[in-house]
Amino acid sequence: MSTHSAFIPAKTAWALVPALLLLTGCSQQNSIQLTYKMGEKVSLGTLTYNVVEATWATQLGEGFKVRTPQKRFLIVNISVTNGGGKEVALPLLSLEDTQGQLISESENSEGVPGGMGILRIVNPAQTLQGGMLFDVPLASYKLRLTDGGEPGSEKFAFVEIPLRMQGDNIQAPVLEVPHK
Image 1: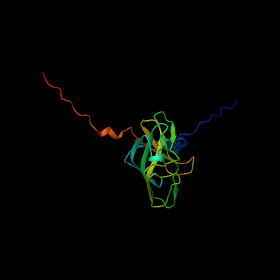
Image 2: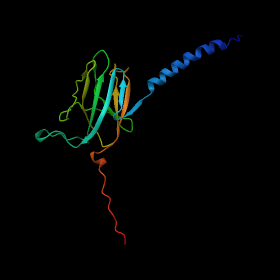
Image 3: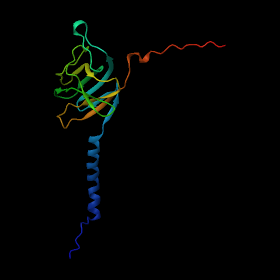
Image 4: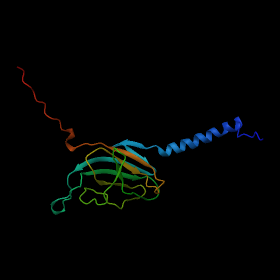
């Protein structure tokens, strides 16, 4: 009867600890999701994003070219700078709702002031600015940004898009109650 066991000598076990920690750190690093606030610069690979503003609209365009949303239009204005040495194709971006569902950017940005369109190539040392259109319910979201890498190996970060209506900064008048 063999009494062979799978015992690893202490010196060998201690030598494996740094490698195991390194592997554990790598897997955790890939699963970290970074979240930023609007106005903060977000660096992802060679791209640097800045989400400038987000506005809600009940329609786009004028006259015979008026567009109405199924829910509500959210226009997100961003700038994207390519700090790398080669061009990057910026895909359509997505919003994430509070339940974690992704909502894709509209392919039709007609009527969006400064709309970015769908073919977005950012050349080295170039900054692309414009608006992206989403048709979503009135709520808070996170804009999912990408480093422009190959599908399956790209990295993401999120920018919080809080629910703010254009009138949020307007304060209601204070009514004085006469004393009796």
